[in-house]
Length: 95
Image (tube, rainbow, N blue to C red; front, side, top):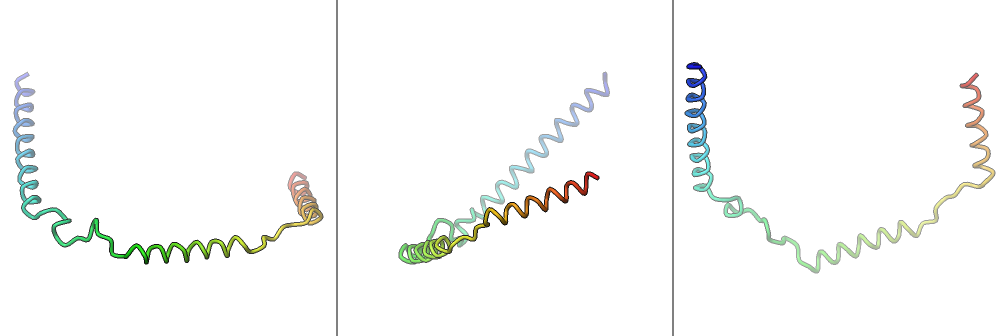
C-alpha cells in the first residue's frame, strides 16, 4: 500500500506542475493579445452592400439562365429499348 500513496503523491505534484504550465501559457497568450487586436479584419466588411447586391443579382441571373434551358427527355420507345437491353444483360449474367 505504501507504493500506491507514493504514486498518488507523484501524480498530484505532476498535476500541479501541469496547471502552473497552463496558467503560464494563458498569461503569455493574453500578453500577445487576441487575433482581432492584431490587425485581423474579422467583423469588418471588405465589400460594400451595393457590390454584394450586384454579385447576388448576377448569380441569380446565371441560375435563371441555366433553368431556362430545355431539358432533354427520353422517349418511351428509347426507355423500352434500354430496359430490354438491360434485361438481356441480366439474363446473360444469370446463365
